[in-house]
Length: 505
Image (cartoon, rainbow, N blue to C red; front, side, top):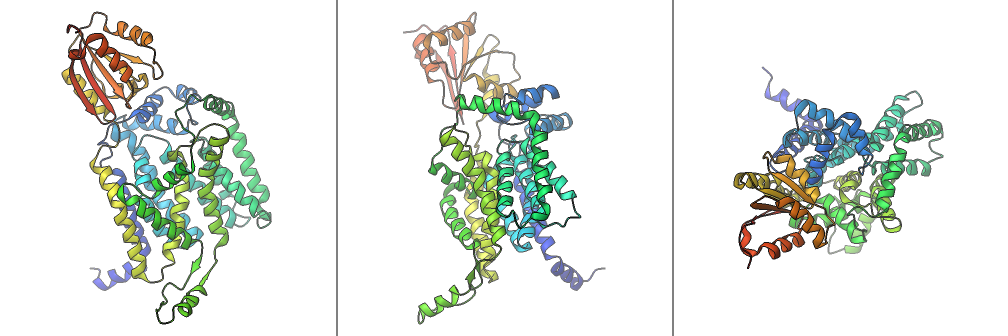
């Protein structure tokens, strides 16, 4: 039998591995727990429906979507193997998220040291923002993973000797997948190119190879350029819901990175201080500041503040800023494209910079106190997320409708795009009609209603995203308030049942 002494000795010598395993277990649990408990909502249902088509149709349909097709192609094959349930479809993103927790450790260790890697990995593992998108059928989890792979191989390229060309190939593959996953992946690639140009003279020995990677990425992405231009043109026409961002939008984005709930504001302050500390090398935090000699002791601390790892910190700052600032600038000077979820790549650099700030605490008790403080302030957002529905309750809506419906009922949905998540759950046979999102004219509403209620006795009205009051008012004006025999509200959805044979007043 192995003695207790040997086990302790092994644990001491493998402390980093054990801590990393605990972090990975924590991150895995938080991403898998209650994975299928909430309803599939609009964007998830749209991605599932798109990915259920034939492979050629998936690629063709992606040309009319907001992003390139790689995620949908992967999801297509994933559903062939595991089905299209909530648990099955979301588990793909959960796997991406779990791998990302490990990769942020690898990059932190590569750029700085294993301590910073572990702290960055821990911050990612409990991140409300990362957990949320690791439990959604969206391409943001894959964007997160590929961003980490891209920067992992980018750093390898910068530090490799001329004999190791494999890293250039892997960087090319990671960047190509990044470009084909999400349009915001292009901002990540641009940030790397900008950093390389800043240190152009330092990397003379790999200039040709790095330029070759960029040219190859552009060449292999070129088949999608026409579709990409079409996407940009459609966005420029203002057909999407995205509003023009403001500086407060950016602040809100960073707030989402650090947490949710009442702990968000304190976390913002904590992360701000830690990131400032991460910019410097502070080796005097273990010293003492005394009231008797305040200026003298302060000068003692100041002499221990300096700069180190300038290139690495600059890399993190560029990594953090480009996925936020570039879409912000485009949104304000061209057309709105800024969405917080697609800037998820920037959050990784924020966690690593905060991790470097935490690592400056040479006193272990102080370091553990800061880590615990962040964990405690993160709990309110996580507790709310796991105990409340934060997505529209389409499962509950369709269950209620099916249970209370009759054979001759008809369903009217406003807006019509909400029929996608409704149909994901609906197993009944009632005919369904949709009224377009922008239909506001009473005559147009009347045409759809007349078509829907022909020969019917009861009408179900499903209103999504607080839209459709005009339709509701029209039906009440036409059939009377007494015709509303059922009214039920779910999160993000309202349901009304009209008896069409009630005499109007």
